[in-house]
Length: 420
Image 1: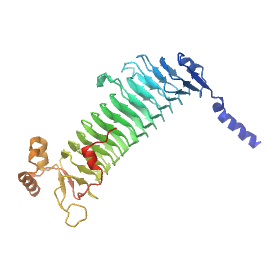
Image 2 (image 1 turned 60 degrees about the vertical axis):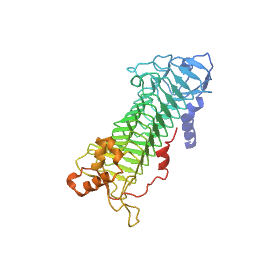
Image 3 (image 1 turned 30 degrees about the horizontal axis):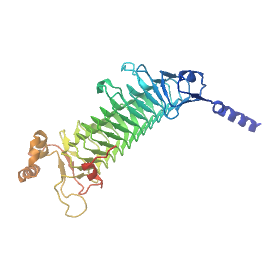
Image 4 (image 1 turned 180 degrees about the vertical axis):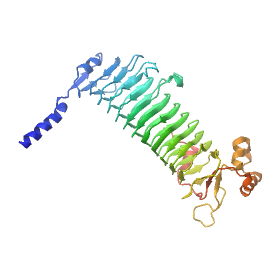
């Protein structure tokens, strides 16, 4: 009797999968009627061709392109709107949404409650927003190419992927460019952003009010700003590469209790912009050949900054504060402009490194003075400032500067940043 009951329960559990049907749409046919007649859990396969229409998916199903068919929204509304949980869209070229920023027109609009949506291996091109995802949990967006309306001014474009009020999102391996912000994330928690290429936009990431997230192995380049993480806590920002951005590589603004480690920040206007950051660990980062290596301000203190390489930045640290900030108290950081010595051979300088000293501030205010940095007069001025505290200004102090960099490949980033 017990065995029969178990078998009956198994049959009931697998009955939807056993009943799932596959529908095929041929070129010249409309897709929406196939969606309407499909049962929950069915698969709709779309043959290669060009299709027009604005699709509405209000039941769990899979929409799968065969040999990359194209679906055009005709420059109106959302090309695809999802209003049901458990919808998968894969292998399609989705394009030509409407232009209303007020209506948030998107290539694919994932409406509130459409949990566990999957958008995989699609090309989302010439849409206002590539993907708009709102109040939908556990979504997966992976291996898509998202390109906005390149002929529009930046302020008139939408974002590549917009996440609002979500939990558990997985944004993996996407290539996003020529949009307003490649990833716009607000009030979205417990997410993973991994392996994405974010480029040619206002911000690679515009990210606020979101907690317990992981940023890992992303490339952000040729934007105005790279990763901008604001009003957040409990972040892991690891193994990312931010380069060639005109303003900043990585912005940390009002951030707490986070780990920022093993990132490469190269050839940006400012490598790190750190504002109102506390209880964070910055370790193992390579900060190379930026106009300003780190812009530090607004009481950013009680942070652990260890084992980083600061190399060939025109200005290593631009510090705005009223008292010294100690970095490298445990193991030190490497500073390419350190002029000290290591008589005991322990790999640490015998005199401390001071960033943002009198000479640094002189160059900050009068950039032409940079031409004299190697002159005996300027070196003497630096020495005098160290001997007379009245001439000192608050700065970043590294008591144990490393004599050698941690990253053996730093010269590659100094001369030739990685191309996508």
